[in-house]
Image (cartoon, rainbow, N blue to C red; front, side):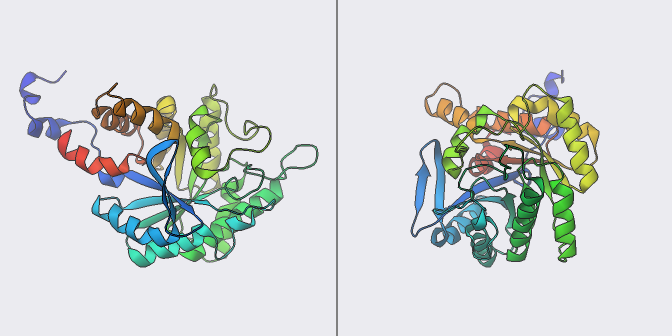
Length: 321
């Protein structure tokens, strides 16, 4: 325990604080939809919005004012098909959103989620054989094609969230061969088949039409397997590894950080956000719990935190330090 004289005021507490949180630690998710003049609150995620492309310029400028310098994009198109075509076409939602953001603020760092579930009519992250096995080669080619289309549109980083075996190596080769060696890959390395994703599936309209995703996302009971997945992604060329969700898996964030010199990312997912947000709004917990949740993720070892609370953080850094 610190001596009382080192805890008596904010200035000295900040000087000796072991874990520091800043706006450079957080990434804010954006959900892009078809249509015009849409800024529609997501019913399961209060204060989070679906945005049409024509509202994206104003949103980008507002984020800049709040000190947010990093965003991750999710596309939610009206039309989907069995081949996930909207994921990789040149004028897809995500591709156009990248261009709008970069035109509005070239310094905004744009990360793109690379997956098929938002664009595929069955809501799955992969293709299947008739017997139910995953069509691995077609899946990897489509994911890599999607990542390449994002890079060509101007994305600064791609983040594959599909959890398919071998996709990091395949994607790295595809990007390199097309001249995008400098585009980093942030791998969703330990993505669990979690019940904490419920509100996101509402936001992204990506609930699977049949079955579930337990055949390619991780069992929440398995920790050593998560570390193995990180090692495999690192060996294939990942630049950053991620644990998702964050708070239920703080142990794996810490263990993963000890595993490698690579930066560690954590996604404070929609269910975590909704629980905390609803509890604060109902006066069941003080708003400081938001800051506490984020600092716990940083303390566990995360260098990057994807969070829906990014908009609140700048004020909290002043008030709660």
